[in-house]
Image 1 (cartoon, rainbow, N blue to C red):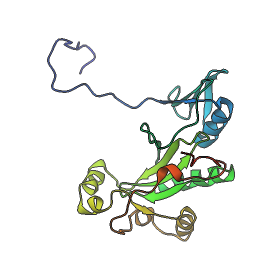
Image 2: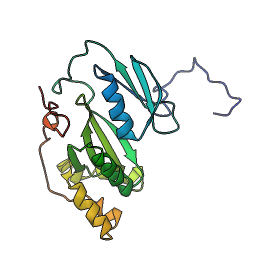
Image 3: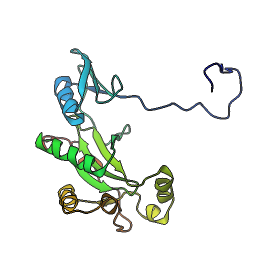
Image 4: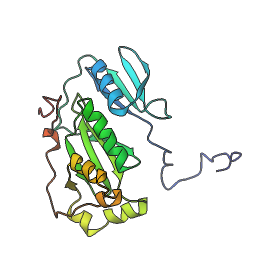
Length: 210
């Protein structure tokens, strides 16, 4: 649409106009200060604004990507009820993904699951309230290639993925392995969905509560 063009609000449409981007995620918590500390550390982010009720965190050009609401009386998360399963953040390269993994590890933030889904190589974490967070890198150079893989028999056979060891992958990169080789999923055949609710890593001593 040109700058001078005006939309016809009365024109019929076959589908809703899609958004330009996903702007932010808002989480409620009874542990506001510690959650702010966690997410600024986890994302390498900064606080745009915060008080004792709400905090806005950014890590890029957007004014905020994560907002945290401190609501008294908020009960602990029940990981076995319906709702949001996880939030995902992308990195530009496997090197960047693993560098961020090491930075978090130095701050005591450890992953709960490392898995090559096929379309992405992903490292999952849980925040202090037990919310799942995915960090990922695309395994293919184009959306078309990723989509084709997701439509393949290999993905239909195993849409979950193949687990990997992040430290072993770092050693392989240091030894000269190509990112494209390490991002190629090792096919293991069908596997069941893991029990995501019970996945836990320090300091989340009670993240597996039900």
